[in-house]
Amino acid sequence: MNTKPKSKMTRILIPLLIGAALGALTGYFGQCNSGVCPLTSTWWRGAIYGGVIGLLFVWGARR
Image 1 (cartoon, helix red, strand yellow):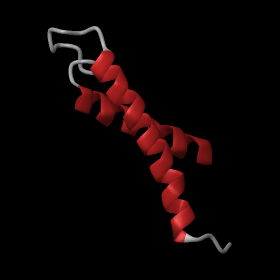
Image 2: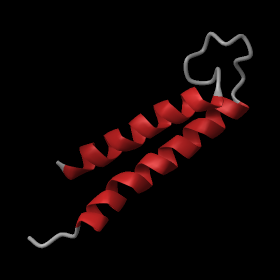
Image 3: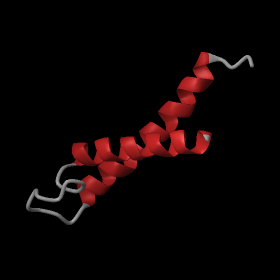
């Protein structure tokens, strides 16, 4: 197999960025104002969770 490193990187980065963007939007527009909800308390925490979920989708699709 002759796969380019650039294509491997984009297969990981694109779902990571999409998940992080969706998570950040969820955290920004979320309904939790008390700060207790782990996903929607802040936009950056939502971005981290979304990025991890995006990576899980990539790794789950490979198998």
